[in-house]
Image (cartoon, rainbow, N blue to C red; front, side):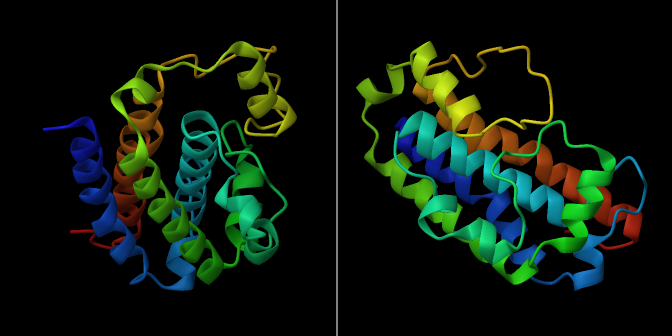
Length: 193
């Protein structure tokens, strides 16, 4: 099995079922935080989409993000470009209450479709490449991939091969958060399966 085929299979499996599930939730369910220490489903969808969009488009394919091509911040009615890591509990609640849910779901679908395009175009040689520190600093800090309200100490993260980043941003990161969605829904008494 090729790397591209493996990516395609894992990118479409569980997360695809989750995308269908998201559409069955009410507005109240998707925005709810049933415990103060858990994120809402809305925040989780947004975070997964932001990580995948910024990570795959900028750090793997070196192309513009879906966020910018479709003016998605305005459509989703939120000001954040970053991917949400290190947001405060209050910020998570504000985003959950404010975000335009139909636009969020459309953005998430658009990001996933682009990710499949990216996965289909990568060569084995592409997968072995790494981004240099200057480019990473530009994307992480100047373009706002990382939350500017958190002190990252100037660290340069994601210094990995594009093959690693493809699977991290497009598969493993999302799988982890899908299980978080399942937990949030369980706390609300909503069955995922």
